[in-house]
Image (cartoon, rainbow, N blue to C red):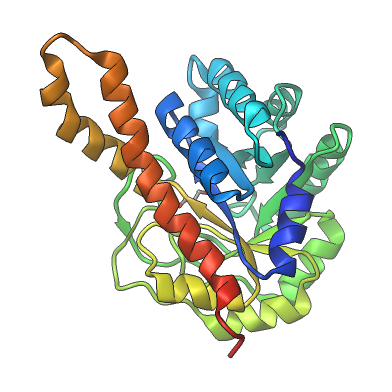
Length: 285
Ligand code: 13P
């Protein structure tokens, strides 16, 4: 069922655990996320990348993802990720997105505030909410290459930012990157603790691909309530196609191949969701 992001985040913060948010570019990926979430009885977020939404069939992909989310037995929110264009935000909301990630992290501070405020106003008219980013999570959303961490989120500025924008969730930059980690990943957990003390809304951790479970646990215990994964599911999709296509070429058995791809991506979603839940099982340090 389509569910507002707020109720997924509230449930995660209570346990505490993190809601898994997975970027989906294909039907196989979206079905894999929905099936795994149902099997685990877990609410999830399906992320639509802004590049995928901008692509020629972006509207069709959004409509398909919303339909899969709506038919799911578990709560699912569809979110347009990393978007800075208000017109595309409006279109995504009209197509059924329940959340936006308004990304003004590359803008000067006051312009980031203005963008997020405008997004919050737009979203409110559709009963949707906005996630925003402060500091800069480096890396490319669409092309996986190794990157180093960017500007880290300042806790004092974050407190001002959230109160002035009305954002419901803040994406923090604490050493996390999009894509592949150039150095062994490390998270600034003291900064996360300071952010948790200063910021009243849910915190999200982007760039979970390549983060070991121990860091995921630490982030959840530190107050992260939403964790975004993209690169790992793209990796899994490509690996599944390469592995299974040869055996299905004879007879051009496309449907069977699609099922293998779904199973393979689902296995990766499952191991990530297990890690995001495990945060709840670990006693606070
Ligand atoms: P990764 O591609 O590093 O998993 O990051 C995903 C993300 O943060 C999407 O917003």
